[in-house]
Image 1 (tube, rainbow, N blue to C red):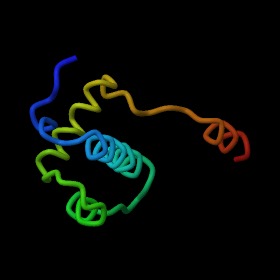
Image 2 (image 1 turned 180 degrees about the vertical axis):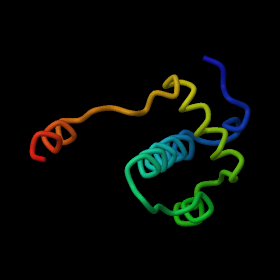
Image 3 (image 1 turned 45 degrees about the vertical axis):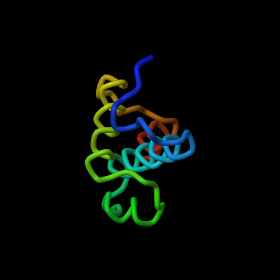
Image 4 (image 1 turned 90 degrees about the vertical axis):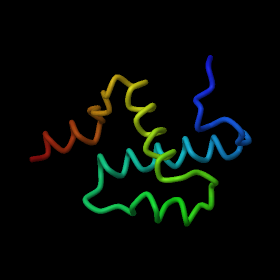
Length: 83
C-alpha cells in the first residue's frame, strides 16, 4: 500500500484522527441539515492537518467507496411503513 503524500511525516494517532474526523464530517454532511465547517473541526480537534489535507482525505475516502455513501437502514424502512 502506498502512502499518500499528505500523510507522510505524521504519526499514526494523527492519521487515525484525520480519518475518524473525515468520516464524521461525511456522515454529518449526509444526515444533518447543519454541521460545523472544516476549519472549526480542525481547530476543535487540534490535529496537525490543513484544510487542503482534510479535503484530500475526504476525496480519497469517497473514491475508495466508489462515491457510494447512500445506504438504507432499518430506521429508513420502518419510517416508510409508519407513514
